[in-house]
Length: 185
Image (cartoon, rainbow, N blue to C red):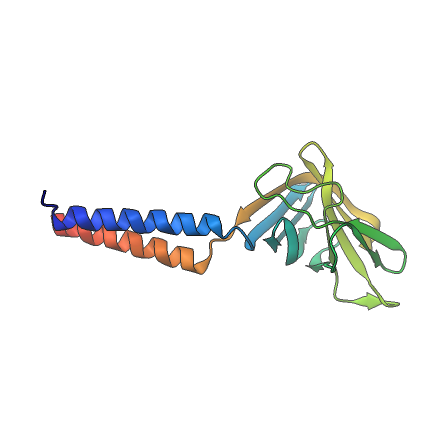
């Protein structure tokens, strides 16, 4: 049976895309996600990297409500829960567990983000983002603006950031299909 060049090209593109999808699913970590929170007059956006179910790096920018500013993800070595003292008096207890494939994606310990400014050896401000109940999250600030300012309840959205190689392969596949389609006309 003789196969036309166009059908062969489409078959090869299909095999390439299927192979790419299989390779990406086999390499499940780390992945980068855009993170957003909205609720009770407060909004925050940021980026976190998740490796084997743990947030390992990232930041959060509070863009509306009290405690405006940019905060870095608090991380530690060893796993389990940890605490970070903020402004010399408040301990944020966190575990950095993230399940990006479920809702809720965070648990009651959630994530802590801290400012780069220090007071008495401690970050001067911190933001706790954690599960309140059901699928409602709490964004709480601690530090210069006071204890629990903001204390906003709302929703969290995680959106995976495509890897540059994935975007490039997708673009090449589309370009190849466009060329095949162009030859037919």
